[in-house]
Structures are given as structure tokens and as C-alpha cells.
Length: 244
Image 1 (cartoon, one colour):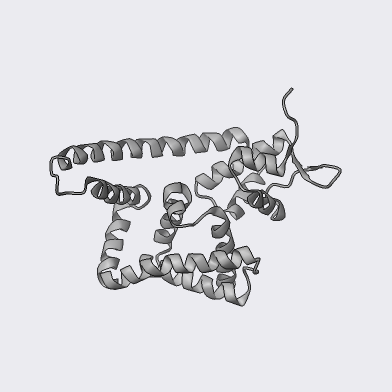
Image 2 (cartoon, rainbow, N blue to C red):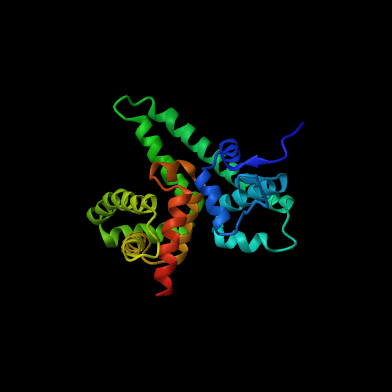
């Protein structure tokens, strides 16, 4: 007999999400299960799981939670439609990955004949460059390169060193339960926005492309400690800043 209702911990473990994430979805009204146990625990039905699938697919497509809530509120939005969008997006990613693989394979074959060259390091660098090509247009990449010249290598290195410190400070406040609209988190959010602006020059399109890359490339976000929880948390603070 198929399982009809899932407790939050069971569902989180099976789908690879944290209990905290599911609780957060409930808090903001994005995914609120209608069923509860006698003890008051959340119980997720098959329809709740189908909706969760839609949410995660739309997240991978780069939509914010606020936008996802708007999309799911449309009567014509179905699980099939979301899956079709996701399939189209994945097909584009697969083609891009195949092209990247072929380029790297050819370069690797040449580099392996030069023992003094660190092939692994070069491939890692090339992969990062090609990843940017997936999310930024040629015009954007040219603009960013000009930005690098304007800002200077030393400042860019300093910015790169500031990011892990800032991310750690934001995570500390999040885990303490500090309100994201509090003055201390708003100060962190202001630093966050300033660092992004140093990289993008304040260009909103560049910022969106950067956000898409971090949302869709798990290896990049994991390496930098930017999971969905911390992005949602700092996102609230940034939204508050914009209102001010």
C-alpha cells in the first residue's frame, strides 16, 4: 500500500530538503499542508508533494519564492506545464554542458603532454570561465571585463576575501533567529549589495545573471556557502533596504 501522508521530517529526508526549509515554505504560505496529526505535526499529501515539485522546478529556473507564489496562484499553472518548462531549461543546459565537455576534452588532451602545467587547475579555471558563458551574454562578459580593469585586480581580490566573512556573519545572525529587517542585518545587507555592485557596476541585468548562476549551479553555491535558506534570509533584508 502506497504511503498517503508524510510527516515533515520524513518528506524532508526523502526529497533532500531541510525541515527548516519546509517549515519556511509553510510560514510564508507557499506550501501549507492541510493535514495535521493528532499531535499537531504537519502531514503532507500527494497533492502537497506535487506542489513541492513545482516549487523546486521553478526555483531551478531562477524564479524567486515571491514570483513562484504568484505563478502557482494562476489557475492555468499545472504540474505538467512546470515540468515542460523545466525540461526545456535542462535541455539547454545539457547542450551547453556537452559543448563545454568537448572544449575541455580537447584542451586536456593537449595539456597532458606538458608535464609542468597543472592540468587540473587549468581545467578548473576554464570550467569556471565557461560557466559564466552559460549565464552571461558576450556583451555582459565584455562589460564585466572592462569593469575589472576599472576597479583593479587588487580591489577585486579584496572583495573576494570579504565575501566569505560577510556570508559567515549573515549565517550567524540567521541561525540566532535575528529578524532580517533588524538594523544589524540591514547593515550586513547593505555590505552585501555594495559588494555585488562592485562586481556588476550596479547593472541590474548583470546582477540577475549572477543570481541565476548561484541559484542553478549547486557546485558554485555550495562552495561559497550560499544555500537557499541564507539567500532567502538576506533577500528579505535587501528588499527592506529597497523600500527605504
